[in-house]
Length: 543
Image (cartoon, rainbow, N blue to C red; front, side, top):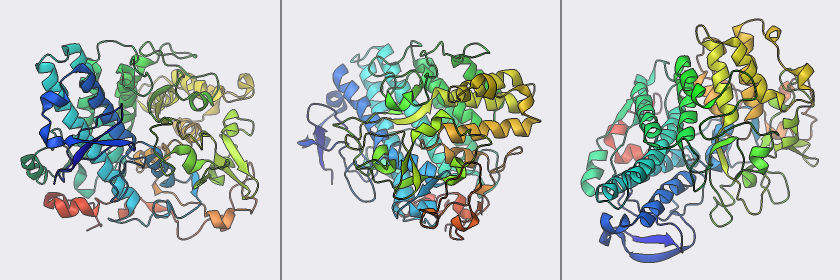
């Protein structure tokens, strides 16, 4: 049955047909409208204003998707707090404190567990939303409702979102690029809207492409998107939460880093990193590091460093179970479901005791534990979810220069120091120098640790663990062992310069090699049941 469409009063129309042929709302405050199946594309995309609302609906699908069987869009998948926490809970630099993320933290998930299941399903629902709107925008452009330039730029935004979503899925459900095994399975690639019964039947026969093919699709989308943007400027509606040419290029540096194509990382990064010495800025989009490492969070909606974030507001946020502050904050009203790990906190080899990024932590005396304090709006839950920052582009660039044949090590040092120095008390004496690194490995290690320090609480940790699983220089080897909260709470676990005590680790959360089936999430049970093709292509060991 096709349900009535719903629209948030005065704001966003979100028309999407899912693979089960039901329409769902992407907002909380809704007003029943006439049945969606009575609305033609000429109506939905009948004016520039309605086209804009349809594109906003696509962003909303990226902001928050349903959780489990609920039809309410109240959880941060694919790109809100819930997904960010998955990126942290699969790593070791933050600690699970409750049952909420324990399946992920303890690596006890299966085909039915809610977090990984919802991640997959909400992501593919979002991909279908992008595809629905892509077809609608193309038709509106052909009919002259939109100018070619308007149509091109909407298409570019949607292609960016599709590439972002596919890459996010790759790091959880497929082996790293270049690592053999698992039949080289990537993801099922959908580039057409699934909005008729006939297309639903077609989709049931779509199987998994290879990792190589999935990367190609994402990069093809990004290359096309870059060419479709007519200017180098930020988006005029919101330069942080709407994609622009700079967002596309920044994402390409990440995707090529995961593809281990160091020369392409350099090629893309050099488009948005001017000069070869600090301070670095971008001729496209005007990006640059903020003066303080706190600025991208305290000024989340107005700063030069946030290349792309997912928007939240007081009227459209991802609920108490989907907002960053609600998940991580130990301030009054926060749930403090995720704490900071002594593994990262205690390390002073790479993280000086006086580093200003330590001010982005909050201490709770009652638990004798530190918590991420990048997100403080516990009540309003309006802070944006950070997806790409300029600091990441600089560190991607630095790593590529160290790793690539004939790379510019002096430039890599400048890029690394640009990110690190703004957090140091005395950069003139504490900055890295060329003599700080005995070889390529020590240089790469310093960059990788800098990423851990700079991006804690932003979901980046699993991305690095995944791509470095079988790395030739600094392999992660697989899922790291993790601190047990109950064993370390109130036990003086945070001691600068000291390794965490062995009794803080539990055998229930051991190191797991990337060759173990648990390194990859399984395709969820719903898709295994409804798509017989995917059922035959489950990740190895999960059948």
